[in-house]
Length: 495
Image (cartoon, rainbow, N blue to C red; front, side):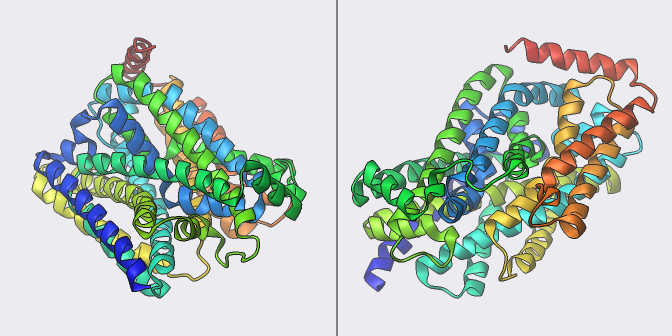
């Protein structure tokens, strides 16, 4: 067993050293707060696209989604379909407009900064509330990544889950401290490539090893015909809930901040093509991994459904190759958590500390404040992740819903509706996040209408509140309308 583990451990170490090296290089290029939280708007199309995809999908893509397909069959693919549609709309309509608008809105470098400038909010209420909600929801999201790390180390090295959780956390948090948006984006670019290759290779090798496509899918169908039925055992509420995951794309700060950081408007069409292709092909690979696992592990079903990807790496490949593929899981985990911690850091430093407490704070002071906040968030996330009943999919589902309902309608309306006001923005943000919390805590049920995914509920309520409160408050000033028109024209020029 030691002989088999040695190549895997060596591969992990080499991978981590390579990521640290990229972090050191990027750290040396970071000279101010704008560089630290947005990379000075210097991202090329490829880096922006793959880093957005990698920070988006996290361990959910390699653990949660294959696990859902392995447990429930093809019907669970509705999540992937919804996410594919959401990713396309995000790149097609949101990316360019947000890139233009944040530059025109006093060169906003964080979402709370953009909201305040977009609506000329002198009260700073939008900045405070949005930054606070980012910190709350990212704490749960970080927990999901840490659970994924624990699953990886527990199943790869036979460690106790508690110990595995702490080791994974130390690796991820230590890496994040290397510094800055460029470091996160460059490493996420490499991690995105690794994740993509792993999800393409594993189902192909598994199908060939099992005896071919026909034999594999005949076995899947023979175990339960509904395994390959996209409509099997799910009603309208279930389909709406699964498709509703796609609504979350518009409100994920760690994804859309990549749009804000793209080098120029001319880079966006190329980034869109790369980003959408990556999402569709990667999710197809994840779906196939889960489905093929139904046949491949029919004789010895897996105790933890979310380990189907890891199980394939152990039974199909030489330990060196296995180590590379397992590094893809670590890549997925790291690429999301570093982005989330960086967004949390920028919310603390730029939006709370500099925006409210010390407007003249130095860059060195702001970075220190952000790092202290990262530690606090990480500790809370660790406590949440130690719940033995926590699964990657459940934790991600809650955090994705909270962020999507809180910021999704706010982003869309602020970019595409000139009549929207500060009051509408504030009402939509609070009602969306509040609706998700109330639905999960008090109303969620296993069946019927109340089984509806909380993101759908929160998204609809937030949209209604934005419209109502905007119409019942004074219209935006001529200056706000003028900036809106300039952003729209700037976006049109790239089409």
